[in-house]
Image (cartoon, rainbow, N blue to C red; front, side, top):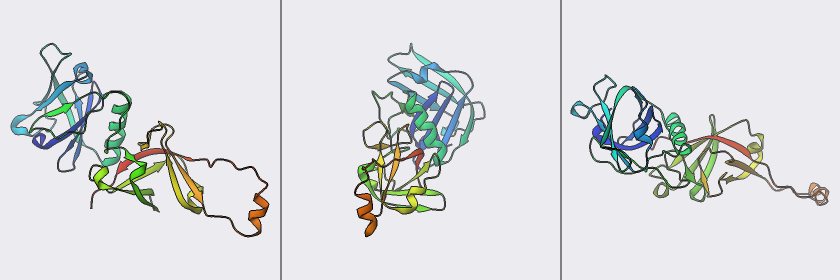
Length: 231
């Protein structure tokens, strides 16, 4: 991994980090031992590697300094591996749930900075705002939504994976995306749903349904959200 173009970091646990690079690659970093310092708020994390290249060969370290650390903590890197967009989004979301997600910031060469957010927040690595959705369609792998790249970190499309089959989508004229936390962000968190809006019913069937009490449409649970490769 070229640590000189590291851009964003998420602290999944005291043993694990995930890093996004400026060239759109993503990596998982495993530490040789628990490093509680990386989970502290307002810390500065530096990945130190020979000539800026990290390979998980045993000669790279993560150095942590900040307001809540006495001096600098140094933790060895035990392993490093590339991850795909789906896995990166899952791990970044796990970091967010643990309260250790890094801000999406542009980083200096060979330097990765992480700050603990206050309250719930999502990033374009595993979230999009439902108000910025421009369109949607199904393909062989599930549901895809088109979003505004200016409002979604440059991403134009996101894959939505559902927790189970959603037969309602087969008859949907449109969809509504419900945020489980009520802030309009769709991240795959508990309560995030896709609600199918059925095509209008016409003819004699309408009069038959007039006497049936209206019920709120049920949604299909969203399991995973991640951006697709930029075109």
